[in-house]
Image (cartoon, rainbow, N blue to C red; front, side):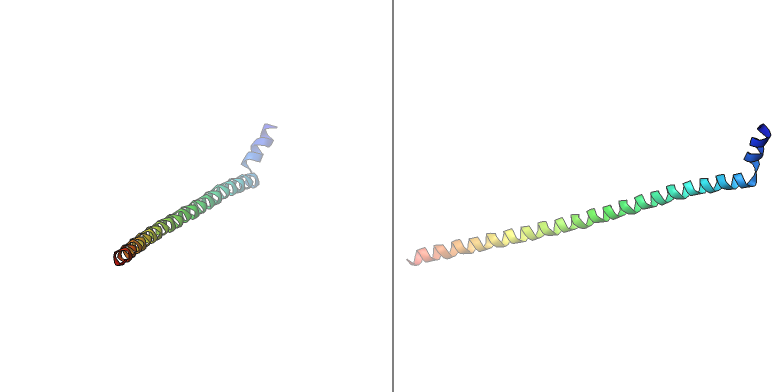
Length: 86
């Protein structure tokens, strides 16, 4: 019994199978890690994109608020001029 187990453990075929299983496990862990890294990079890029878009939108909102403020000021000035003429 012990000789059979010893022969099995030392046989080249069994060692090859164990080696293949270990290599498969390492490949699986490595590919999972690479997939996780790709997903992390994609999410990071998405966050950067939307953060930039948010900043651009905030700038556009500020520009539009300034434009509205100027238009209201011009409207008030026009109303004052009309009152003075009357």
